[in-house]
Image (cartoon, rainbow, N blue to C red):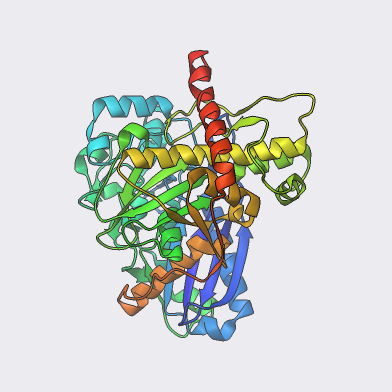
Length: 483
């Protein structure tokens, strides 16, 4: 039996799998995000552990016999979060999350001072990454910086609680900007640029390797017959790729979660910093990946739903079937944007609102706007020489057939939908736990059963291409006007 723990931004998800990767039980515990200042986004690290404990307790209550037979646990989590620990392994401040924008000035400074961030790290220095967050703390909270003994990513803080070990995996750690991604190791030069050394970092293992074993008191708490191994695991997107079988070169998936991700596996390190494409290690050995990332995917729909006092599913249902692009245009830049703009200051907005515009038109515009932003990601990957013809959709947004139809028609790809698409990252984490327990990756990462495949509609292609062309003019016009 194997467990996957996914530490998300809004919740912790835990699943319990059988030997044949059949789902035995699942549990979820909610989390909250604090925004004490504009562009800030933080969480209490101990809230992750409390939520993990609650989810694991629920699994033990639902399926005690299966829980007793667990031999491997895998972890996934939201990337880039700066979790600063003192010498006693206790958090010194709230974790600065992936969608926090406070370190924009530090990004400019770090890129100018150390060009190896783009050469070795393979990515533009963006506020979302961990390194500029630490530089912000160094400049604005020097007393906290001086006390920092370890810097961990969110899932690796949970690992510390599970095993007592300071360990990170390659895929998640590549998102810190302190790694030589090609060599799959920490870079002393990149660490030094933010006043840190290897002593501040966890040790590194592959995502499918053993990082430690579960502490005895937790083995007893959850009724396990023996201490299961805990796998290195992966960042949420790499773990999702393991869950949907996107681990071989050219395989791809699309994540419609809080953020939006277009993910493609590669057989080598393939950066494209000019278009703000992310190039990281994969969670499986000798593999890398590229990602185009937008910051507000389902977040955009959730924002609209909260604004009009409805639920997201109610909005998409009321909108009806898709027969072409919306009459209004929406820029989904609620908290800035990554690919391709790397712009923390740009903000969202509608264009083309008229007396006839109602909530259904706004909903349609939001779905289109997110799809257009994903088209930007596709174009950025194309510049890097990557061709995508088929993607597997995961995340909460993948439950909307209308949204997937828009994306398939605009991107001209087939979109496959797994039967359990909402648990892509936790499934991938459980598979990594299985690989660590069995000591092999052979046959572990096959695609899961699919519930549907959404084909592009050729009758919508021309209209959506035209709408995308108009949408593309809005960002440069806004920047020229000083927004």
